[in-house]
Amino acid sequence: MTSEPAFKSEFLRLMQTRGYIHQITHPAELDAACLAGPIVAYIGFDATASSLHVGHMIQIMMLRRLQQAGHKPVVLMGGGTTKVGDPTDKDSQRPLLTDAQIQGNIDSIKTVFQRFLTFGDGPTDAVMVNNAEWLESFGYVQFLRDYGVHFTINRMLSFDSVKNRLDREQPMTFLEFNYMLMQSVDFLELERRYGCVLQMGGSDQWGNIVNGVELIRRVDQKPAFGLTTPLLSTASGQKMGKSVGGAVWLNADMRSPYDYWQFWRNTEDADVGRFMRLFTDLPLDEIARLEALEGAQINEAKKVLANAATSLLHGEEAAQAAEAAAVAAFEQGQLSTDLPSFEISRADLEAGVVLAALAADAGLAASRGEARRLAQGGGLRVNDAAETDANRTLGVADLVDGVIKLAAGKKKIVLVRPA
RNA sequence: GGGGGAAUGUCCCGAGUGGCAAAGGGGGCGGACUGUAAAUCCGCUGGCGUUAGCCUUCGUAGGUUCGAGUCCUACUUCCCCCA
Image: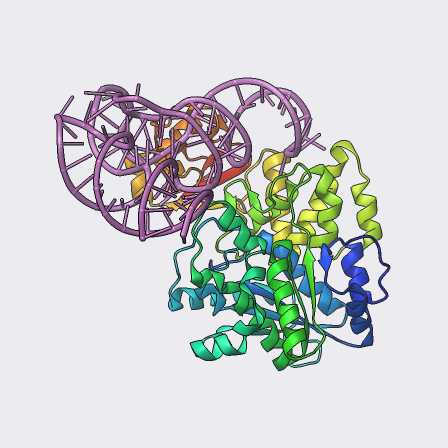
């Protein structure tokens, strides 16, 4: 699919040279459509958590590229679909979220897009819509008659999202089974409202996207296209998106800019070039130069990557602060006030705090037991000295320059400060 | 509708004779080596407790037993065979 069909449109060329394309439904037709004028394309995001995470970055960047190439991005928030739950890649049904939770998540997720896209009423300005607007107003029988007729069970059973679940002998409810239809109807609705012709998404969404494409072509006899991105894994084969300490959230209140910077800084050597193309706006020739660096020098390229990616999300200032904190902590062994911190009441500290409890509360370990094991393994550090006794009591005497520096491993650092 | 089998550590796969906090992988985390990389080697991987120990876990709910992942009953879900 990525065998260099030499696209003529700026958008598809951009997508191809930067490595976003895994599959396209009708490459030549889509290329022609992009050439003919601004097109409207969308990506859907479900509101299952109060923040998106780095795994979503490739989709967000794709909308950004779309706008850069002179087209109109539509961000679809899945207020309606989240109520059903996408069975793709899930072994079992998630607990259903309440309306209030979903709305809260949407409000919180929204903010991130403004950093990557220009919203407004102009022809290439981005817009954000919520599929609850239409999905919630359908009557059951009407929905079945209008859309259900276009889907065969035979076909639906053949899609990976369904097949995987069945293969693993896990139950799949009728509710989840309908997710596919809802996503297809979304595409149709956006086509009617905004003239949207393209849906993009991760490769796991291929089935859902193709269904929408076919629905539009069948019902409205209009052109419609789908484009998916490759599944992102690191060069050594791990699923991308996790880092020390779990999911890398995009919202600053859930993952600090420092952590976000660290995530990119820790990229594997072999991924540096690919990630720069996907996740930054750096020009291709500069990327080529940077990724050619060898040995320890590639670390400079990783910093460039981290700075660029963090600037996009959190702003340049935050990126520089993160870099400064990292340089101080890792290269000079000094403290920086920009390191993540945890506040403890002065009274508690004066009374004495058990290390294991503090480490757990500060987020360095999931539980006190884990903190103890960490200490026994030599991974817990207090003011840079390994501490194997997690039952030790810390007090004001342990303050150095007003803080206690706690570290789990070499990369997870928290400054405990009394307040 | 009838018959047979299956569900295990809330990340996944997967052993398990009535004495089990439950083998072994993968993944994850930590240590060593490096360059905050990869590969490799080592350790850890239910919660609370300093130790003793206590609590919670083998699909769900009951039961038998001093004692249940293991036996019985019902239910849920999945697979296979017959109709």
